[in-house]
Length: 146
Image 1 (cartoon, rainbow, N blue to C red):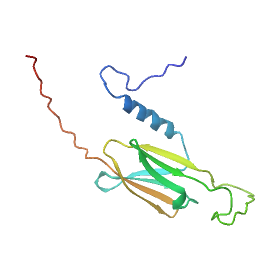
Image 2 (spheres, rainbow, N blue to C red; image 1 turned 30 degrees about the horizontal axis):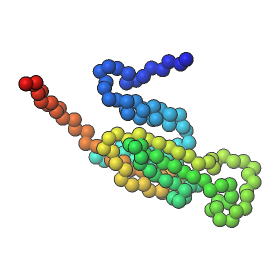
Image 3 (tube, rainbow, N blue to C red; image 1 turned 180 degrees about the vertical axis):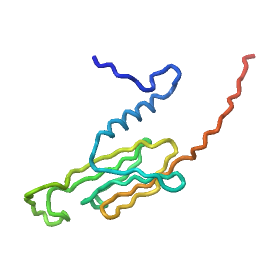
């Protein structure tokens, strides 16, 4: 039996089960190396995720937000000629360019929004907005039993 340490396993952290699942989901995706990507900060606290997707057309890529997760998928049509229209199989003397599909997922914080995606020169740019980082204390009124 394997015992695993729960990051949020504390009696003082109530209702964080969903957060625990998000952390586990993000940890599973962290081991993936393909395709390579960058995450950069932009003006006004926005983020830009850039994936190197050389050889993929816009029709082979999908950007989806589901359950606070940004999912970017690339699907290959097969192993035919470069544009996929001639149907002629290719024989490689050396194959160093990956020709496989992929799925890369990023967990989004509450309130984050994907503003758009742009394919440019073999790079897929996905712009994400950050929520207002202002945290204000909230006073909770105490009711008394009568």
